[in-house]
Image 1 (cartoon, rainbow, N blue to C red):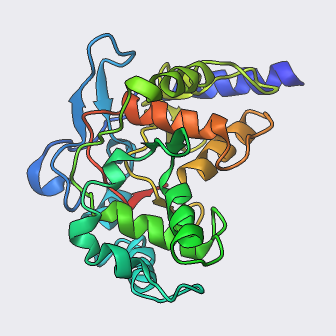
Image 2: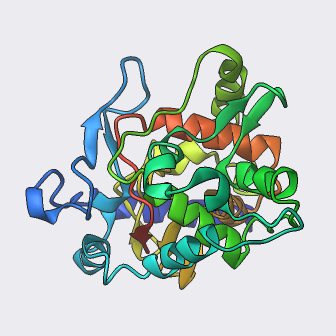
Length: 280
């Protein structure tokens, strides 16, 4: 049975051919606030060129992201703005109490996450940084990773960096995390014995299960997925991919997923932040 399932996946990949990656770098056809959805690959990198997931989406899906009023992800961005200015916790503070205007203080922050925290001696994702601020500074309860509040806040903060190039640190103390993320990316797991690279590197642009495989870039997260009918985190997408290949997923916020997030950011350098992107 396992062989039949794997054979069906391979057949679906091979039969589809390559997708037309859409009107990349075509002026008015680009996502709102974004000027680059295709970039040269880094020297020595595994890809011929870097392509945003935008290019592998249907025209109707692209149109949703082209207009902020049509983009359903902006419902979460708007909620995030409200939460930014809402006092919560025993300290009687809001995010704005310390950080003031997010359009100024948060500009570029999302593009550089995950970021090394010298005090903790480890990288912190945006979700982890939000919760650290809540517990340490606001004396408020943590938000769950996939809660509406966390998704709204991360979408709002990431949106302040829209159009800025992904710029996650890869050297120094982050180097072992990049290495670990790369190792996980190429490791075959699950009943289908597949790795991330099998789909998003070896077969991107091919048709599978009524959709086109993208390069799996992370520059659009948090992303509104039509399948989810809501915004979701990158770690949710990681879990979904692992379930698809019949593997036991790591937990959201685990060291494994943090390392993978860091590696993906490095793999997609040259692309711009699109959050909240719209995907199938």
